[in-house]
Image (cartoon, rainbow, N blue to C red):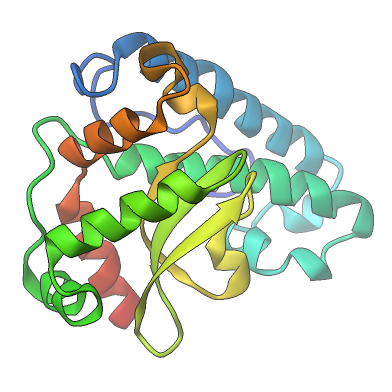
Length: 209
């Protein structure tokens, strides 16, 4: 993910709002990006404005060093820097005409850790359906290079815990409620249909570099 620092700019979607139809509807994408992500971006900049010593810090640096920040700033960074980081990752994990099986070293690692792509999808969906409340489900690598399925609550981010993200699924209701109401299962299936596995492969290779 391209690094930037204060003032953080609203992430530009790499596709049109309607490009993921019929899997992810255009209105959900517009509201998700133009309202939810914009709000996190604006609140992050407002929180950082009085701290010029942090203006050169990237999202990753902020999230990896929350406990070293001024106490009154920590929740704002956890919630808003996390909200920006997580949404950028989520939007980047999707593409028009996606959903292909991964290739290369990521495919080999998924075979090793999960017994194949279809087994991974089934396990990932099972975990996503078990998430209570709002949050994200991630595929990450740990410090030993193993793949793990990991849940984060609210806008917590796995980078704060030392993991390298590969893909993420937004499980806040605003990501799917307009199309699926409270039926999360259909949303998960649709998300897999637009999953950008090339992005996932790039992230996995970078995590092992």
